[in-house]
Length: 238
Image (tube, rainbow, N blue to C red; front, side, top):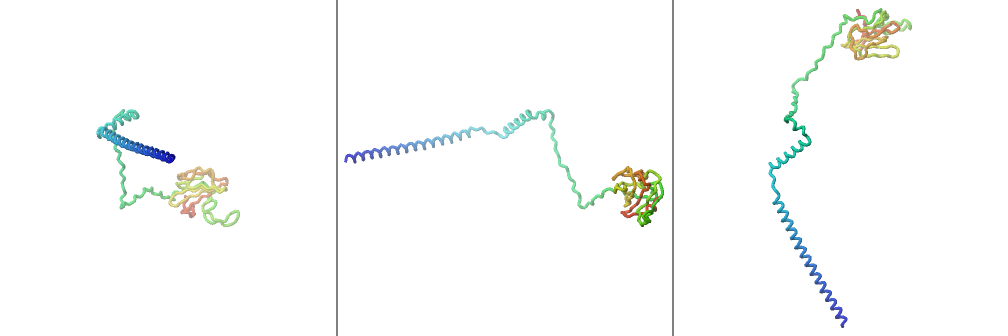
């Protein structure tokens, strides 16, 4: 029986101590909540007081501060700006003139093409005609061949232009050299069996200008073409 009482007393004392611990916990929690609320109210009131104490800056004062800062930057970094008077320049965009749809497209100014005068067509070399224009029997092989120009037996050392024009080609096949001059209006003159050519493609030549030398055979071919078709030069040589 005494043992039972002893155990009962210990349990009662333990329960009493436990209630005191709960009470202590409740008290501490309540004090913490009160302290937290008070701290929050204090901070809020401090922030509001600080906001109320912040001075208000007007727009004029702000512009003055900005101008002072810009002036200080220009003085320190770009002093050359302050050396002379500042002139404001207004750049106007260029005015574009739109074409009138009803206006006709202007035609380019073309130089009139010079007309050829075959009345003054000179001989390309000094000599005699060895082979005429057209079909002829070859003196060595005996077959018929077509000669698209005139073959001259040369007695001089100069090959000349028969008309003014522009050199358009200088060709060679390894056996002979050919020079072609454009005289306009579809007319070309052709020179073969020549050497020592003194002009090149793109060069402008005058009439009676020395352009080459005869080959060692003493024979020089001269031809005229109109729109690519061979023409008998003997009808125009004077």
